[in-house]
Length: 454
Image (cartoon, rainbow, N blue to C red):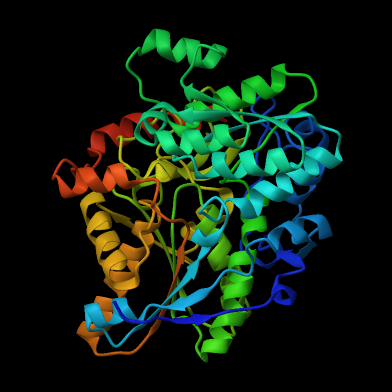
């Protein structure tokens, strides 16, 4: 393992505003729709579900910069700015002329990038006088982040955790409970949506779409309660742009500009956070970087999904989003990258894919664990299974540079560490993990009727 080069910023370099990509987009995404009226949502129609300030951010298509509240920025100072690292050990292992950099978001108190949005969402709820919040979580990283943020602002939190991850990742559940959250395996008997799913399919191991349905239902039925979301929607991606804004300054310190920027992709939070600040330079014509979203081959909404209006949840409670989707009824394979097992993508990355402004690759599970092991042995950090998709894509790009004999700068987002995911590594080393690809007929079955929704 070689000593890798770090680029460190100071507290004064933490961004004072988030970057809103919507005003700069060449093609604006279509609006999210009210599932009852099939008309674009008005701000006040979303107030029962989300904090008012979050709704304003979600629908803001005019302001490029949204000020970060000082109280949020003060909490960011606990771990931000995060390091940018030149992965010399990995470069040497691959014998590549490429320069590989990673933004290390695993240094946050909860071990992932998710706190970047959990803190402002909890802050806005508290400021509005909310007492209770609900959410969903896949791998548990978002749930852990929101549990800490909720405790800081004195909010009661209920987390619906996808049942397969609830059992695969018991220590993430323990983290949430340590911070004071109530954690419920989804589907559960505590909501109408959960009871129906269990009745219809008693062995169902859950999905993020179902967990969202349960969290939304509880929020709507509980006085003085709001729902909070860890990915997909515009306001979440907005908060995450602190990642890319810091990385811009750090790449300048390194004397390079990335030719390729990579993030793993579930709903889009960390991919959007690392890429949006860089993609604005493509929009202006100053740069011509590539942007790669790395998703699981078992949940390939960007590479094999359709572009249609769809629900963000299984029961159809949420706004209808113009998205690349596998269908809201899609039941993903029980891979260990639980945070990426989501059926759709946010409206902005979906539009960027449609316009050919970003790329996507789908990566088999075994390749991600091989890449994770290589990264751990060369850089000393054990990555989360989700982040390992970005590492896999970075390795592919570095090996391509080697074949072509070109030197390029590759930047990826290490969105979280894998120290609580060691059971999945145990299964990989024992040969118990497999690759899974969805048959085409299953994709067609899940998506053929989507256009009838509107």
